Length: 74
Image (cartoon, rainbow, N blue to C red; front, side):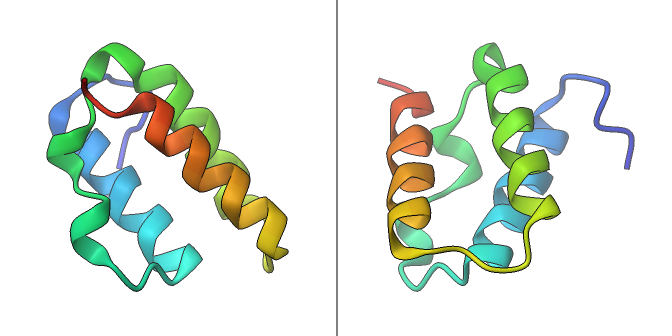
């Protein structure tokens, strides 16, 4: 997948991969439709950071969740 292009499809892909990696239990809490392409670069930064790491501390998971919350459409 070419994530260098801003698209709704890429947003959906990144959100799903972040959810998988973080083992999000409440899948409805994070949906691709919650995110706008306006915040694509920020979402991509989070995606890349999440994909680089193998494990996350509770505080890291909390910080990621907060950042994703900040990027949600208002």
